[in-house]
Length: 126
Image (cartoon, rainbow, N blue to C red; front, side, top):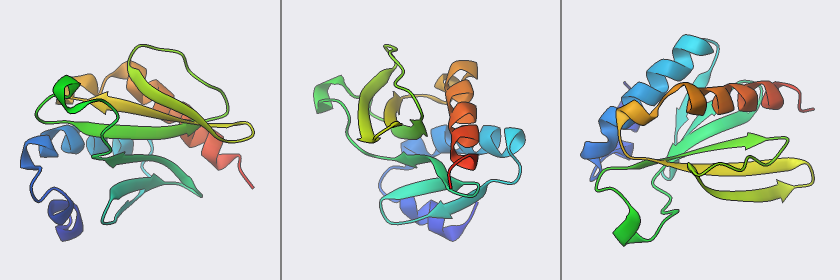
């Protein structure tokens, strides 16, 4: 874990375990992934950005768990699922999805399948 990532979680230490699980699973499945921590998000990239983790408040504060991480990924199609808090068409044929994750156990097969689809979608971009 880099200093940049630890700094990103300053003030949000309770969410660090969620992130650690996310990073572990992404790097296990797609070992060529580059991880880049910035002030507002941690990006996961192959040729392009395919997913990121942030503290984007996609639900009202009363509806959010105390410790949470917003996992965002882009697909070539919208996904209609109760886990997805927000879906927007960022550009024609490119849909951004935000999933609020409240525990490491929520980094599961379903979420990783969407991230895998995002990884492949990103690889196909020009």
